[in-house]
Length: 420
Ligand code: F0G
Image (cartoon, rainbow, N blue to C red; front, side, top):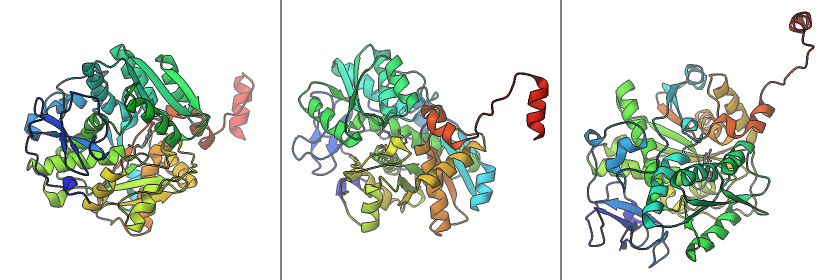
């Protein structure tokens, strides 16, 4: 693991810091000015970059609600906002009993303005884009990123281009990108191919890239971790033992790890209390699980990927170099789950009143699988992230749920049907 990703790394401000913020390469440690030129990777070694600060916030610094409550932990003090964050942390008593755990909670990120956690990153990333003076924003997407970018780009009055894998984006997500006015290109390749193309355009400065390789976007996503820790401590006392989340590009996993590292460095979180980051992928798209199982520091790209959870139908997790140390250093793990397991978990959440899209349910499916394997102990208090709303993928929801029954429009006909 790169020394720069250690859980208690210090952050001395270098000369390139602007407003106390700079970008550091996680591979070679080189520091770069944050806002002078548009860079997504280290100009020296092509490594992933992360934002660093000369001031690490304490919980006492936070004020207000939503993502911008945590402005002290972010690279800018306000953004293009449509009230993202402050999502519910639900109790699921039946699931908790069934899994035989001390506590299972569901952090429902589908309750963000565009229905997924991507809004947390976009409120920061689109603000930075606006400050940089770029005109055209772009992303590759399995759907949610494009929906969020379309909305936040529209809010900022900027042009948005989205590259999507043809036929593999759920209906709700496509509808959002369309109505918010994004230019939508459907490529005859998978998500990874779309990302290759948009990264080429970004490298040539033809677009500003807002995929999770963009280090500023991940800063906004850190606020999921801050919210979980604040609300959990207030309600239950202490810190959850484990956070389970679906993994695609591993951006969220990386963002949560960074959140924990900063809190540890600030003296706000005991290194022994850091929640075990537990990633879940679908068996048909599980390169990160493969790397964790094999003890590798890098992932091998899967050329072919398939799963009902189209949001995480990804074969080349671009943030693996940040996420693999995060999973290992926090004592977490990663597991692959079947599409059947995902659909069953989606149903279990739905029966507790929580509607999520298939990828989101992977977290609960993964927790169940790990519990069955004895990896998760009965005394654990676990938070599952559900990353997107049920309405994102109405077709999957309808297929997994009850079927409508046609009946004549009379009371007698309805009554006799009910009597059957
Ligand atoms: N869950 C949902 C609902 C998602 O849309 C995504 C990613 C993930 C989980 C995985 O998050 O990439 O941070 O590991 N969706 C991206 C998109 C790829 O284009 O909407 P990750």
